[in-house]
Image 1: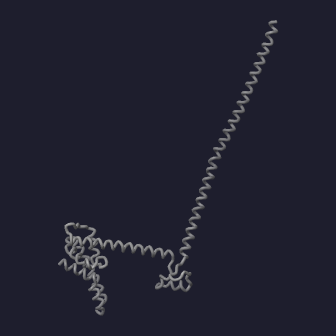
Image 2: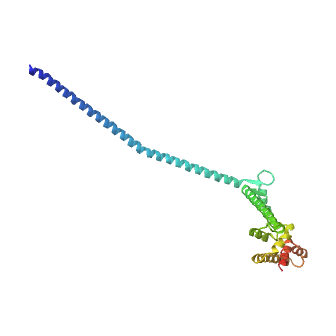
Length: 248
């Protein structure tokens, strides 16, 4: 009896062992499947990583090509615009394009201003603006010099010496437009009080003016007495002579 009871127990144990063995196989199979999936994932990731720089490289190449084409279009547009400006002609009277006869007439030196291109017109406007700015600055300088001289004469206590003012008055002393006749008497008195290097500079300037105008008189000859008299009586000549006489 005892033998027969033990046999079914052994069978049960054996059956359990078989069951355990089958579960190990399943685990092994599952692990193999997981490893395969992981390997496939790593392969796909590597492939994507390898393709990513290629895609980026292609995108950057596309961007570079687009930029190059945009630059080329811009340059071609600028060249076309400049050609159009050069070919465009503005006639002083009337808005029509000039005829062949008008162009031939305009090519003559005496009629050089008859036909003006856009670029020349812009250049002329720019030069006119520069001249206007120079005139404005010259007017301001003349007013400052006048205020400086009047203060030197009328309010010597509050007057202060300014080197720049003195140089400006020396350089414009013989120019009636930059130093008016109304202020010349004060300027002559102020310049006559110069000493040392300032006096030497003024003497040289006055002598140069007189020498220049005397040479013009000599070139005119004896027959041009009226023109010689006009030069001698000019503001430049008279102011230079008066200044030299004030130093004697």
